[in-house]
Image (cartoon, rainbow, N blue to C red):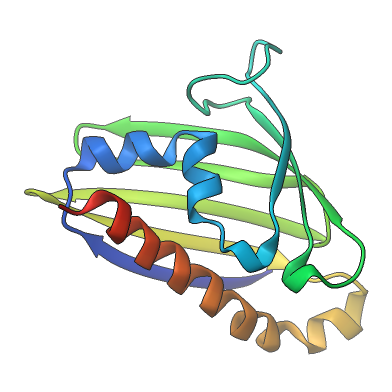
Amino acid sequence: MATYERSVRVDAPFEEVWTFHASTSGLEALTPSWMHLEVEAVTGPDGGPDPDELETGSTILASVQPFGLGPRQGWTSEIVARDRDGSSGFFRDEMVDGPFREWEHTHLFYGDGNSTVVRDRIRYTLPYGGVGEAFGPLAKVGFEPMFRYRHRRTKELLER
């Protein structure tokens, strides 16, 4: 699996950053409009709809249409791990169904006084076997604007 990582320091307390990222509204707020994200359903670990917090076992059924081109691509992900210890924590979502052969996104949060470091680590395998692997380095070029936007938007929404 290939890996992409990006970090940002947010001048906001850990608790606010953690809570913001644990909701569907956080996901929607951090996805660039050019992705044309539609969250179709969110199910909690108990099977109930629209949980207040995305806990381990929560599932998100969504679709994207990058730049409005081509057919919508379905994307189902599950929160497979979530833990915190004082002023640090993480959660991990894995793509259950979607455009990648494999996708694992770990969101890491480290409180540092009145600031929080947010780190995204994506491990992925592109589709189409060897052909997809040959284009792996180009995927990072595509990830960069997405995560640059996510981190800039996190700062805009949470810093005072």
